[in-house]
Image (cartoon, rainbow, N blue to C red; front, side, top):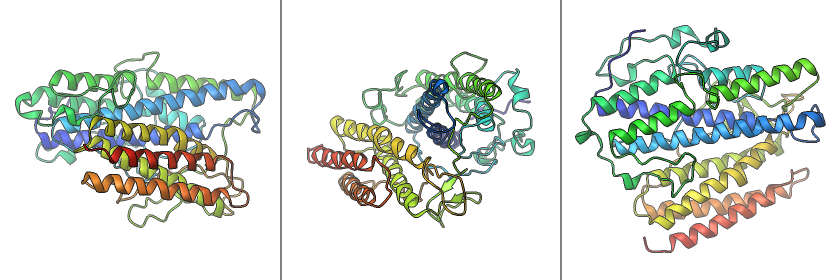
Length: 421
């Protein structure tokens, strides 16, 4: 392949960074869905000897998803640094194979051999290796093939792998003079004092910091130059190997619930993708909409955090802590619950799973006072809805704990908003 010319305009760089942010977001959701689908101790199809193996798989995949969230945060910092807007938007699932010009579809799917193979191939190393055979036939060659790029049209720049996407992004920080590229204030970005990722988040103010952020993304996961033990590819491939071995030893082993591919709880006339499976069980739909509301609220808080204006450090820390608490105390437990709930009469024997649906109006007000007022109101509304669903016949356990968490953050945001910025 002939290397494409370097990126030389701000507009093209912002476009490619927006694609990267969207891709990192999509991968994180897919990985979480798969991790949530795994069974736990006492569930059918998993022996006591297999529980530890399944638990380690879930922890590994959730850990990879957390790193994708870190990569999303870095992409947003890079966008802010060069004058773009943080991007937390993405299409609903399933996403077409043409969505990121990489030739592979993005789909919510249960843990299994083919799902793990797809994930490993998303993350495959840049250099040739045994992974080329593993991934043969997975991507549509017509969609993954490079095409000449028109320097005047960023949307036509093509790449075959995530590694090539990041090479294009990296090239811009050498090709565009730093004196005119870095127009966004570092203080507007999110640093390690707000979200304690490991390694720490990087605030980007020059080309050196930009290259370091891109290197962290690539070496940890997408398109690492070579095969390394701790890359995302290596970890997914290790799980795939262990699963194949476990199935050979025990063909009755069923490590995951039979969740629907791409479950959906809303019709989404504004952003519907054909191929989604609309859940019909009434109680499952109520719980699914609670999940969607919590996820939507977390995205709104994250967009305020990455695009803030007027908040002091304590208020920003409140936003960051609320987001992390929503993920661990609401989104994760509700997602796990949904993988165990029936999908409906149209899907006999299948369970639902979380949909990670997004809406066109998933964005906070640009005005600080109204953004915080709406977020507080939403916390209270979802908490009330949790209490209502928790009282329904057959409701799963854990909903009242989610309601208490939401109500706590409603109060916390109210107290934080009451301080002068």
